[in-house]
Length: 276
Image 1: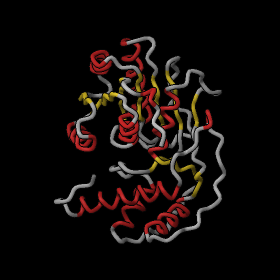
Image 2 (image 1 turned 90 degrees about the vertical axis):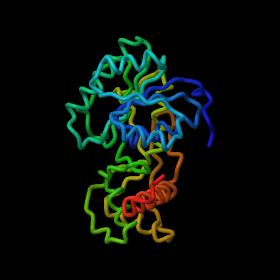
Image 3 (image 1 turned 135 degrees about the vertical axis):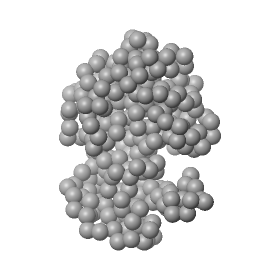
Image 4 (image 1 turned 45 degrees about the horizontal axis):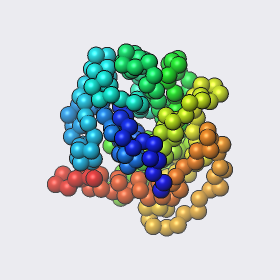
């Protein structure tokens, strides 16, 4: 995979859901040589990040509604780009909107020129999270899955845990929607941060093209887990901003996801072991 040297040495600030989407963003930025500052809500999350990245990042502890704490963190570390990773649309959107508004206010106090990129998972058909701001770039994606989703709110997480424990995966029934790998979402966010021309309609919409129902996803995951070579449906190549396409195939994404959940479930069921 090509490394974009334009991120080398740049100081980046990440807030919001730093356990899942933010975790993937940290990983990609460190890989590309950026200096990463993560705004962390609590000690367990910070300890997990430090363990995963072996002290290659800076942690700032605080609440996302603390304007002074956010502003001082940006100023002390001389931040060049701000990322906010929103939680999926299952949480209270008024709280999410307020957090983003406070972050934008802190960024404005710090510098009138620093760009802010906010990513909203599971938001392709929603607009209520929009916060109008000239320096804000909004990224909208479908249902995000992949390593790091310890809270397990999505269908992929439920199926992966069932497979790892030898449980029946059930007969899931949900509408078709665009599933997207978390590591690919991270590269889309970086692309947006480097773009100076906003898209039509105000939001950057990225699709993987992997549109499936819950039942289709469950059968594919079961086939990958059982080391079969399941036949993948013919997914059309989506038309995304600036020609962006996923870096991973669906098979690669599911294999990596299931391997991660295998280790996580082993650690949960046998506390003497620990998931990477």
